[in-house]
Image (cartoon, rainbow, N blue to C red; front, side):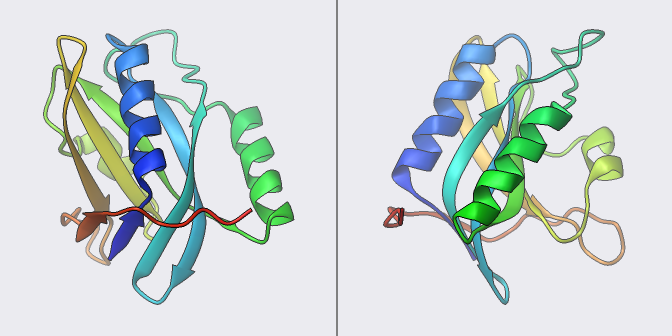
Length: 144
């Protein structure tokens, strides 16, 4: 089960709408316990893709390194990533699947004409398929 705080969900939506018509991207910082993932923070990162930013994202390595370092300092881990699909469904593309790693959760936020439409969560299974992850967007206390 995936739990994302209301603040985290709002941060994803705001980032996706702000970046439109380009894809946004960000990192989930939180905790993992078995199959349960608690996202404590959804941290925006720069999309460094300059060739096709409307259909592809390249998360800035410097942002990832900074976010991972801050997570470790807080006793947390990087547990996943999010990005948006401008004017496309919140379903993983073949490119999303090919770049995914099995240990993370991936959230995709669909934005149509600049307005948020839906959010889905995915994990990569052992067969390299991308089954939809059981997601529950709930208010989770943020620990400092």
